[in-house]
Length: 280
Image 1: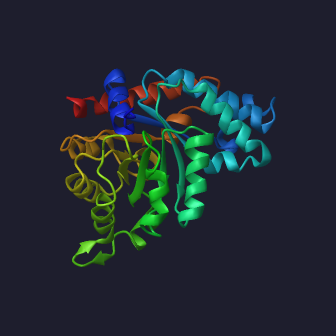
Image 2: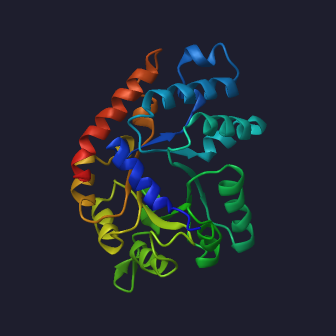
Image 3: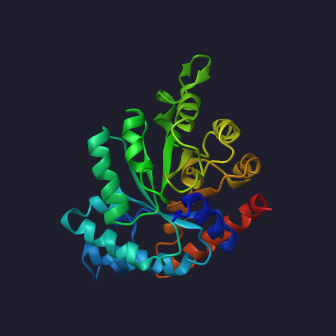
């Protein structure tokens, strides 16, 4: 039986919620509301915080992205907190593991197994710096998504990604090469291949969208990293591939008080509303 592709499931969720918003769950203990951290241990505080954020935003979010570093930083309890957070998110909502995996083939196979078979994430972020064999094990999981790093939103991304190679920026070479590894939105025998393209470099985002108009895109970099939704909106309207616009800190930490969940919902809804024209 053919497995429904990640791109298809994501598109359906976007249509259902009229949303492109991906809520990034980056639970930083130093920024959690004091009323949570003062009366609970770290693991309990993070689970309660994540639960409140998810319950407040689930009907306005197209997906969630869990940054694995914030869970790993909890030490031995991190895996349990990660699993508990995944259990809170309804099964119909796509969830992205942001771990930026990218090791050699055999190691990549185990990373993919942990991500997709054990934790049951719908998609993950992967670095392609080590080439095709570091990405292929992730694409070998039907119905899952792979967001390959192309043009990231961090300031140091330009150190390599923007370097000219054969007359074009290196990130373009990454996209062109990766597209030959597997057709996006294929028949379900492979995972859906998409790209990470940050909102902090709108020209790069525009070029990546033009190179891969049918591929899923994960767009970080709004708010704290300098991108804005109006620029993103104009860029992504060209192309048919599903798009997730991620916002983490601007939603999670919209308030440090007891109303943090309500403030998070307001921030997520404001972003959702600003991006609705891209769905028309």
